[in-house]
Amino acid sequence: MAIIEVKVPQLSESVAEATLLQWHKKVGEPVARDENMIDVETDKVVLELPAPQAGIITQIIAPDGATVVAEQVIALIDTDAAAKVSPLEVSALPVQQPSSNAPTPSAAPELAPKAAGAAAAIAMPAAAKILADNNLSVSQVSGTGKDGRVTKGDVLNTLTMPAAPAAPAKAVLQSVNAPAAVQGGRPEERVPMSRLRARVAERLLQSQSTNAILTTFNEVNMQPVIDLRNKYKDKFEKEHGVKLGFMSFFVKAVVAALKKYPIVNASVDGNDIVYHGYFDVGVAVGSPRGLVVPVLRDADQMSIADIEKKIGEFGVKARDGKLSLEEMTGGTFTVSNGGTFGSMLSTPIINPPQSAILGIHATKERAVVENGQVVVRPMNYFALSYDHRIIDGREAVLSLVAIKDALEDPARLLLDL
Image (cartoon, rainbow, N blue to C red):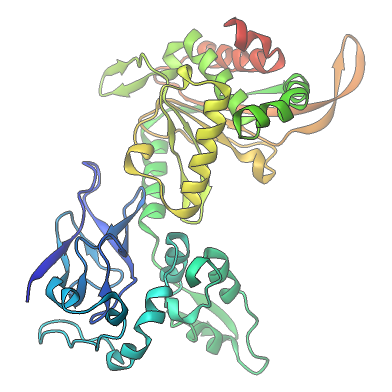
C-alpha cells in the first residue's frame, strides 16, 4: 500500500488552532483528488481541506469537533487502492476496516452499498456548521442542492420541522443527540461556542477594556443619494452587471472623510500612533457563522462599480463560508450597516486595532425643519464610535459631518471636495 498523510493546512500567524467541523467521508470510502474531505474552522474563516491524492481512506485520526494545529496529520489515504479499480468500480469498493489503533465507525460495514449515495450527501460549509452545532449528521437531512448537496436551508427546515404530537420536549431534544436538560417541561440546551463566536466575544471584550470608546451621532438626509441612485440604477446595472446599492456611497463618503482627518484612520501601537497612508475599509457582513468583516483593500482607488462588485462577492462568500484569511485580515476603518436589519440607532464597538467604526441605520421618513418649514425627508442616524485616547471630539465630530456633507451632496465625491 502507498499511504499518504492528510494534514491540516497552514493557518495564519494569528491563528494557533482550528476545529474540524464534519468529515464528508468515512473510513473505507473512496475520495477523488482535490475533493473536499472536511471543513476546518478557524476563528476567522472556514477552510476546505481537499484530498491531496485520489484513494481510499484507511484511517481517520482526528474526529469531528477535534482541536487541531497546522500540519497535524488527521487522516491516511491509500493511493494504490484507487489505482487498482476503474472509476465505475470505485464507488462499489468494500469498506476497509481501520487499523487496531484507529477509531472504528459504528455500522461501517453497512456503508459499502451506499458509498455512491454517501459521496453525494455532501453538506455545504454553512450547512455543515449548523449540523455540527446541533449534533446532526448529514445523513439525517435530505439535500436539495446540486447533486444532492445539503444546503443551509435544508438543515434549517429539518431543525424547524414540528415534532410528533405525542413526543415530549425531552424526546425532541434527544432526537438530535444534543446535550439537554428538562426541568418541569422547560427544556434547555447547552452547546459550545463556535471558534468564530468565541473569537468575536474575546475581541469585543478586548475592545471595551483597552479603548476609551465614545460615540458621536448625526442625522443624514438620504434624499440626494436616493435620487441619484433611482436615476442611474438601471443604466448602472446594464453597464456594470451589478446593482447599484447604498454601501458604495457610504464607503466613498467614509474615504473622503478619512482623507480630511487622518487620525480617524490611524491606530494605537503601545505608546505610538500609527498613521496609515492607505484606506482599507472593513465591511461588516452577517453570515451563518456570525459577524465577519471582510476588507476592501485600497478603497480610495476603487470605483463605485468596483465597490459594489466586491461587496456582492463578499456576501456570497460569507454565506457559503468561502472567505479567505487574507480577505478577513487588516483594515483601518470599519462600516457596519445595521439598517439592513431594521436598526434605528446603536453604538458600534471598535474593531481592534482600528480606532473608529461607523454605524449606519435604517432610513426612515421623518419630519424635519428646512428653511423654517416642516418637511418630510428620508433620514438616517449615523453613529461614529472612536477611541478617545488618540481621537479628540473635534476630529470625530468633524469627520462625521464630512461623511454627512458628502452624502447630502454626492457631487462632492466626484469633485473631491
